[in-house]
Amino acid sequence: MDKPGRVVVVGDLMLDVLFVPERGLFVRAGGSAANVALTLASEGRPATVVGRTGSDPNGRFLRETLAAAGVELPVPPARERATGFSVTHRHGAADRVAYVERGANRLLTPDAVGPPANLARVLDRATWLHVSAYGLLEPGPGAVARGLARAARDRGIPVSVDAGVPQAFPGLAADAGLDFLRLGLDPGPDFLILSEPMSDHLGYPAAQRAVAPRRGFGCAVVTGASSGAWVDGERLGLDGETDHPDADVSGAGDAFVGGFIAAGLGGEGPREAARLANRTAARYVAAGPGWRRVACQEAPVLVSACLFDTASAYDGEARPRPAELGDGDPALRLYLPVCPEQAGGLTTPRPPAEIRTTGGGAAVMAGRASVVTRDGRDVTPAFLKGARRVAELARATGATWAILKEGSPSCGATRVDDGTFSGRKVPGEGVTVAALRRMGVSVSPGE
Image (spheres, rainbow, N blue to C red):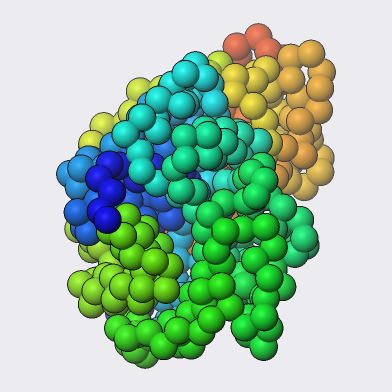
C-alpha cells in the first residue's frame, strides 16, 4: 500500500567539487542528505532536508538546486559559517577525497531549527525519517537527529540510518559505532543501511553476513555494487549493476538509499525494495550524477569567508564582497571561502588579535613572533593551525590566487596591525598569507 507524504532527511549539505584530468573542474549540489533527497524527488517522493548551508553564494547554489527539485529546506542559512564543501580528485575510475570542510553543517543545532515545537513540526507531513550519519559525532547535528528520531518513533514513523563510510569516523570502534547509529532509540532504527566497507568496519564481514545478528536494529541492509546486497543476512542477486569500470558511481550509494525508501513507501518489503533500489542507483549512474562543468576552468580562487557574505570576522560581521567576485555563482567561477581563525578552532565572534613584534606572518611561522589577544592570551597555535588548513586546501585544489581580507593577522596581504591594539597599521602580511606565498600562491588584498 502506497504511503503519501514527505520523507524527512537529516544530514549534510555540501558543494561537491570534482577535478578530472583532461576533462576539467566540476561542481554539484551534494552532501549525503541532498543526494538522497534529489533521488527521492526524481522518484516522485517529496522530500525535506534538515541540514544547513551558509548564506554565501555557494549555499545559494545548493538551495536553488534543491528548491528546483521541490525539496524543502526548513532550516535558515547560517550567517557565521560558510557552506561546507568537499574536493575530490578522479583518476580513471578511482576517486580520492582530497579535502573536506564541513562549514555550516556544524551549526545544525536544535536552536537553529527553532523552538522544540518546530523540531516536531518538521515531521507533521512525514511518512519516513532518514538520517545520514556523517554529523552524528558533532553535538549539534547529533542532537537534532536524535530529537527527530525520538519524535518519529513516538508517531510511528519509520526511521532509517545510513552509516556512511569508515574514513569519516577514524578511530571509532565497532561497538561505539553501532551505539551512536541507534540514535538513542531502543530498539534502534527500523533500517540500518551499510556500505560494504562500513559493514566490515562494524563487524558484519562478508563471511558472517549470512548469520550476522541485527544487533538492535529492525533490519540490516548491506549494499555493494560488485557483490549484490544482504538484507537481514540473506544475500540477494541484484540486477542493474553499477560497477562498470568507466561509470561515475559517486553518489550511487545515496541513490540506493533514496530508491530503497521510495520502494518501501510504495509498499515493498525490504528485499524487493533493495532490488528496486539497485535499479534506481543504476539509472542514477547512467544519467550522470548531476555534475556541472564550471564555465571558468581556471583553478578555484580562495577567498576570505567574511568577504563572501559570511559573518565570520572577529566581530561576528561580514565585510563587503569585492567587486571582482561578481555574484559568486560556482557554476561560472569557483570561489572557495576560508576563515583561517575558525579553521584553527577560534569562535565567532572572538577577541581581536594582533601579531606582536616585527616580522609579520613569516616571523610567526618561524617562531620569532606570536599572535595575542587584547587581554594577552597567546593564540598563535590557532593561527598556525588555520594557516596549515588553508595551505592544505590550496594544495588540494591547485589554487594559484587568493583574495583575502586586508589588515587581518591571518589574511592581511600588505598591512597588519602593529601589535599595540591602537588601530595603527604597519606594512606586513598575515600568517595565512605568509603560508600561501611560501607555496607560490598569489594573494590580493580584499578591502
